Amino acid sequence: TPPAQIRNFCIIAHIDHGKSTLADRMLQITGVVSDRDMRAQYLDRMDIERERGITIKSQAVRMPWSAGGETFALNMIDTPGHVDFTYEVSRSLAACEGAILLVDAAQGIEAQTLANLYLALENDLHIIPVLNKIDLPAADPEKFAKELASLIGGHPDDVLRVSGKTGVGVEDLLDRIVEQIPAPKGDPDAPARAMIFDSVYDSYRGVVTYVRMVDGKLEPRERIQMMSTRATHELLEIGVSSPEPIPTKGLGVGEVGYLITGVKDVRQSKVGDTVTTLRKPAEESLPGYTDPKPMVYSGLYPIDGSDYADLREALDKLKLSDASLVYEPETSVALGFGFRCGFLGLLHLEIITERLSREFGLDLITTAPSVIYEVTTDTGEKVTVTNPSEYPDGRVASVAEPVVKVAILLPKDYVGTVMELCQSRRGSLLGMEYFSEERVELRYNMPLGEIVFDFFDHLKSKTQGYASLDYEPAGQQTADLVKVDVLLQGDKVDAFSAIVHRDKAYAYGTLMTERLRKLIPRQNFEVPIQAAIGARIIARETIRALRKDVLAKCYGGDISRKRKLLEKQKEGKKRMKMVGRVEVPQEAFIAALSGD
Ligand code: GDP
Ligand code: MG
Image 1 (tube, rainbow, N blue to C red):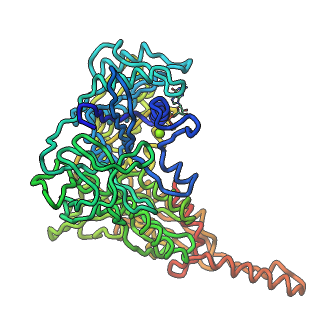
Image 2 (cartoon, rainbow, N blue to C red):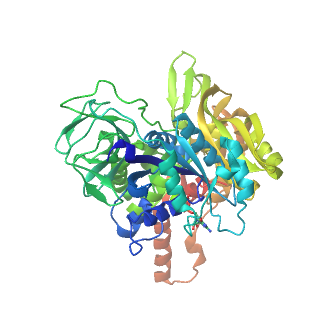
Image 3 (cartoon, rainbow, N blue to C red):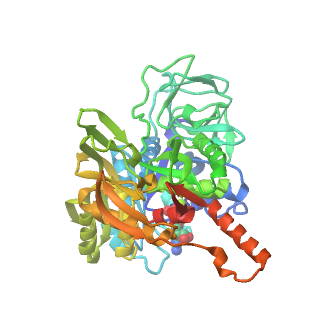
């Protein structure tokens, strides 16, 4: 297809504003999926993976659309909608010339609407504003058309109104894509340059790499080169998704498609990298390649220690399809053998732990998430701490913590409560803006460590679910942080150590000691539970001694009953962990860590 007849676009929306439903309707109206084969959320890969037990991920779909007597190829490129994946979002956007900004006509603009819009504008995309769900009785298109128009400029009448559910307005939208979104530009005679905007692992075909051709041409059987690593591969198959893969004779300027080279690991094919050919290599790669960096670390431990090898295997497998996942072995007194894992954010953590449990059947304990601290010691040495146990106790000169810029959108009635919450999390107000009479945006600088724990849950419960949140990294700041340890009979329980602000150390210490007193059964001797900063004890609870004689209960000589009781007690012991002399049921650790 010549570039003049190609349109590359994406849909950007806050979660639940109807992106998947609209995509379904477009597939149906353009005829690439027949009514008979249509099912809800056709492109939502994870669901399909679960249903069919195979991996098919189609990150870009090509749809034919006729307008003014010409047939166009519309390439719809999917973008992950969440802040954790900002880097991937921005790569997908870079593969497009335009974006549909989709907003729920009963809800209006939300935090992720804004975050994605800003990324789209940074990539110079043409924006088509669209209100969705106009079939809903609660829809107020007049009001939200004004809101949208004042956000991006333009007239409220130019905001399209559609329903992804009923299909109303979707044909107009397709026409408008052809009319307004610029055709791709590029040099067909230059050495090939293709940008990788996604790369997925397929158990049958190996890694499938999704590219947007910028210059030149790629053809099957050619040797291609990854510009960041100089690694070369033979191009076994090249094609387009519509939405099932269709092999083609090549991809030219402006086209979007997939490459298969037979490599087995997505790290060989990195999002943001530039593909060229070995025969006629490009000199300069396309702008914007960075390695995504983990922001949040957490320990993952199998509840049943014998699952350790399975956990390692499962992580190795997930890594094939998710280059941003990092992990290394770690041991804990309390939890045994596990892995320290790095994630892009909390949602990423949730997705990974959920996949470990769903797809691999693993029961895991996840330790409290920790951010990355840069510690300078009294001798001037720099230490990067992703786990409280690495904290150079007693030698700390200063600590820097990561800071994020937070944007919260909420109804104005909740502004007071939310400001209080943000202040209690050491936030400093950057600004406040009204989007309409009742919707307000609050912007804060906040330590990431104050958000990773349970900020989002608190935000939701304090606003009856009406607030939405987005954040982006904003550097580091030094802060008065300390490590709080928890000790059982004088022995440190590593899984409970935490790095917290000095003002919150006491609260953390009392919380953990009280929790553990309730969770740990009495022993034959007294057990002090303490919280400490270095050598200084800041909180203490005591579990009183108990002589636990199970046999005392059975007077009389029923031997078999006695034996049963003894066996039962032995069973119980198996799930106990020893911390020094103290026996702690595994459940107590899990309960104490599960928070709130
Ligand atoms: P996504 O998270 O943006 O992909 O949103 P979905 O497409 O999954 O839609 C979220 C919810 O809104 C689902 O329950 C849909 O059935 C519903 N929905 C989506 N589009 C429409 C629409 O046009 N009208 C109505 N009434 N509901 C819709
Ligand atoms: Mg969706």
